[in-house]
Amino acid sequence: MTNSLATSVKTLLSGELRDCDESPESEVLCLHEEYRPRLLRYVASLGLKPPDAEDVIQETFLALFRHLKAGKPRSNLAGWVFRVAHRLALKRRTLYALSGRTEGWKEQGIPVAVFSPEDEVLFSEQQRRLQNIFLTLPEMDRLCLQLRSEGLKYRDISSVLNVSLGFVHKSLSRSFGKLIEI
Image 1: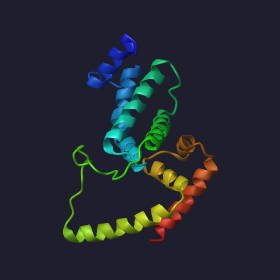
Image 2: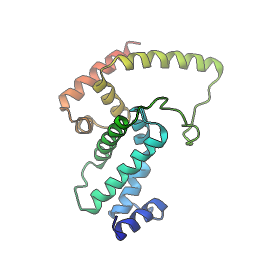
Image 3: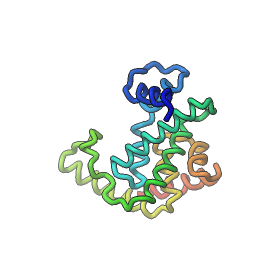
């Protein structure tokens, strides 16, 4: 890493810059603040443990910094970060045989909801039914649904997964239809 890039990354990671202007450092900080929690959930849903998910997020935003620093296009950066995180997560997932993907979330400071015992039973039953339906969906339908739940538009989902816009529409229609049935 060159000295200027290393200095910029250190400044970026230290959190010194907070204004959202057009500089790469500032833009990456603003996007990191806005998209990190959603990216983290999405990457974890692909089967990565928290430390691996965090690594993927850091690699994604470092790639974004380099992308912006090189003067490359700034259009649709939300879709861009999800696409890069998706690809990095899949690469990471193939390198490791992972299990227990939610292990360690409490330690990471990710909030865990507190329910009354009755609410827990009702919630658990509903979650079990939803999970069973979700797990019966084909993998691409599950990915489309996960990306949509993170707020990505159909066009962004199609770009992240490298499928047609029509496929995304049909996939989400099928998935929502099955989920509504419960």
